[in-house]
Length: 341
Image (cartoon, rainbow, N blue to C red):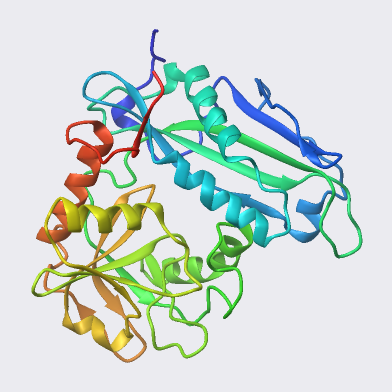
């Protein structure tokens, strides 16, 4: 198989259409068998439920070329489970897990020439998504839906290495108590866009959202979970019913406990505790870990001892171990790696 003639080392984190994508439709109470198509355009009715009432959920995962030349994906079963849960919360027909995994395999195989080579620092980003395609004018769930999956080659989220960023405490709430903050739906990300642009306009890379009920506990950013490291090396991740259950975060917790021998705790984290932590990071599919060097609140600036020059030592070990597992350089826990080619 001949790879596409791309400057793999120069790729950014941007969309580039590839050869094939997967499409399946839900009609008359059931999903069809799905098919691969070449056309990247979506044609829907003007009264489609996605356009009227924002019925849409999505996922994000990656395919990698490993050290031995295999093409693999990382824990796609967890993406299938999370998308199933997200769809149920928005009264959408969940897409079957096994069909989801088959679709991932098909999309990667059909676009194998677009999977970046090992050592390039790039990967193939896979975006499954589902939306209400049937027309609906009254406020109610649609009767027809479409599931699609495309992929695009992407470079590292941070060019030249992951330098610690400065973030601010947002004046806005990301999610409502007992709302939809725990599911991966486009509506949650739309809610965060204005706050994101305000943060950028003020010179910050991201927001720190606090809990919407009391605004005293740390939740997440617009698209990533937080992780903290105490001064004695314990990994602490915030616990809340209104944050997304990040697959990367859950994987990092396992790595901390089982590969690095660290204590890992998930619990509510008060904003007033931040000054006592040694390291801070944001974790998600795109960058794995984005180190945070400074948090600016309304009346306080927290500078983490790890500094603004490079990842803290514990965060770096977590990052290197997880990316080593993904690339095949470190043996993975059973079931984490799905070999496709």
